Image (cartoon, rainbow, N blue to C red; front, side, top):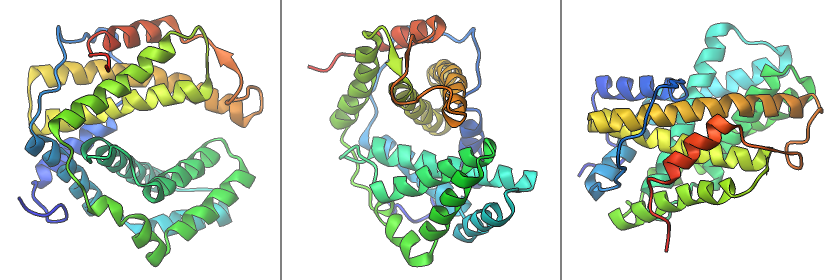
Length: 279
């Protein structure tokens, strides 16, 4: 097999994957789960999923553009619409590669240095969205520092070295992810932080099937993808409300508790029932 860093996939395949990523939270309330869910994939298939994510990121991310965005927001507090879109798309490619490393590496843990870039990009994006000048300045400084050539190289070094997961480790990882949701559904109320962690599990599942339906198209992958995308969209809309309340100081994100809305709880419960419980 070619190295992780050597291009392998066509532009059409990469474009198809990115198109799927951009609609990862489309809501279709008629979407249904397949009768059964399986996790039977070969190590080769799982590694190929990582390789296309890496190629999409490697060919679609510009460190110098990140510097320009940080400077623009620090000094002018504004971005042209096309630049906003390009920044959003860049962060989406970062996030998709982070998911891929966590899912397809044997350790199932993303590099904290790489995560730091994504988190600060998210801080900058949120501060701009909610027009919080003080937080925008801080986030812009962090993003600028993380984009310095030597710092950026250090923070992205690990994602270039994948230790491919085994099929057994992959199955255990996914079952444990879903079990995290199962356990939190036992609670009557959750905090914004816990809800966000549950949503991240669903987001990673959406990303998984974005890869599988791109590389290994089937009605099964498409059906599961639509269901997960709907859940991701419903949970994302609610999380946006939680973040807005956090930014205007009307509700504490870490301590305030609330009931998971019924339509989200029902869909999460139905999904969890399809997976094995860890021993």
